[in-house]
Image (cartoon, rainbow, N blue to C red):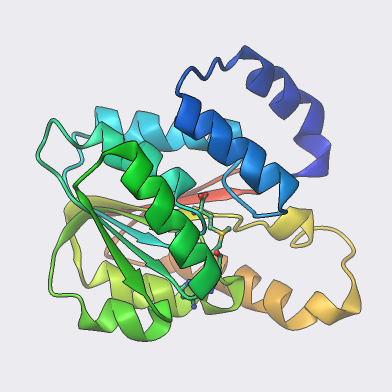
Length: 211
Ligand SMILES: C[S@@+](CC[C@H](N)C(=O)[O-])C[C@H]1O[C@@H](n2cnc3c(N)ncnc32)[C@H](O)[C@@H]1O
């Protein structure tokens, strides 16, 4: 979470009331086991966009334990929509399967594997793509998923400002990733096939709208 906005984010999080017991259980599990899941205010925004844009089909890159996937898949049931989600880590993939089973949702297609390879194999089209996996590959995930994105579709990129390291001093070991993310952001602002906006909440959210 961006340190500068921590108090504002805490205030917002304090206002969000979650009643779904599975979602609460997954939040506790993630917290206890250090599984990175979307922050609550980002989760609320994700659901809001999916709902208000009448999104039908979703591609998620980075399932983890299925938290954001289940949240979004619930929002598209009425539209008869499907969510495809990709996870590279076997243990997390298995935990996600258990949670998806508990959710009772039947509109989630889980793929186990490296999204760098797996996105290329998908033959569906999507209205919404959620990128939330290894930051070093954000550009690849974007380039491959935009090919599957319908006109007027949105790509939602989480953690794009990488704990604020893009604009403040960062540990040397993050040099490559910081430079990559910074030039990725420049490239998104310069694209002619859509519009980009950068939002400073959560850990930085990038939204790309395909014309
Ligand atoms: C931040 S977590 C995803 C959190 C999830 N979207 C949520 O909010 O509930 C990132 C996940 O992406 C997975 N991941 C990282 N690189 C990946 C890749 N190349 N392909 C697929 N999954 C990847 C990690 O194993 C991790 O579980």
